[in-house]
Length: 303
Ligand SMILES: Nc1ncnc2c1ncn2[C@@H]1O[C@H](COP(=O)(O)OP(=O)(O)OP(=O)(O)O)[C@@H](O)[C@H]1O
Image (tube, rainbow, N blue to C red; front, side, top):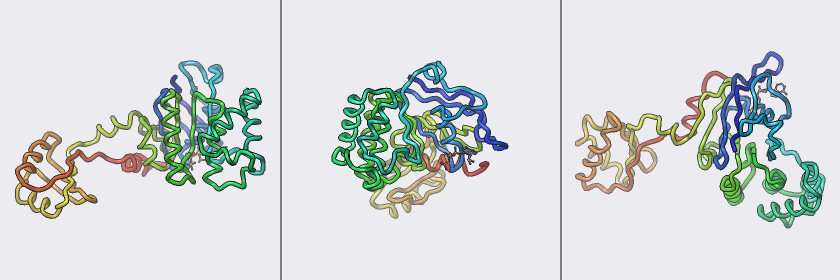
């Protein structure tokens, strides 16, 4: 399945929030929708969810307008939607029925998801008696109980401790393995980096960068290498003595020395020099920008 956002414009009064926004997400691959506060991520998601329409453009599922595609969508909104005072299982069954499930089927699915998220012991409690992270897991169970083909998660990790964050990562992995389209909006770049194959960065109403994250990273200059060594000071000295013209600049980065070379093809020469040096080397890799570096580069101006 392919979800395609094509040429979307959206204006609120005088404010043009989205301008010709296009990207697409595929089954089995997570897409990270990124942008600074106010960039238009939620607006884009609301248009996909048909909360309101776009001024121009269309949302297609396998080439068919989403309204006609009759596709199941699960949306975990940033401002969570369940009733705080109501019993968890009861309202999940109600939600399932609203989405077209039979009550019995909705009950079974709700219980199965609560169990998968280690929340079954809380099924008969009111939502607001739970901790923030546990409420979050219930919201996720409610998002997934009708087996949506498209899953949209807005800041799903907020409030989760590391153990629950891992549980959510495992669940997202299972959704992707089952061929779901997963759209993920977050400011936590490390999570996006971990499981989004594709990204779309919104800035100033436009998609300023989109595509496969690996390919985007490979498109960056590859002439800086990171050398890991337990004897960084000696390594630095050695390179100063022996690598003039080869290492143009060096600086320590944590446990490694980052060395800028004249070109990507000069890596083999540096490796040969290291082999001769007798120094202990634990790792040698091309330095790649983090998603955080890329995000800052593409969004620091123009909001
Ligand atoms: N219903 C509305 N009426 C008027 N303006 C709106 C409305 N909804 C959103 N906006 C404006 O559209 C812009 C984009 O908002 P949106 O909520 O889509 O951003 P976002 O990228 O999700 O931000 P955040 O990361 O802070 O959640 C903002 O300037 C916001 O004020």
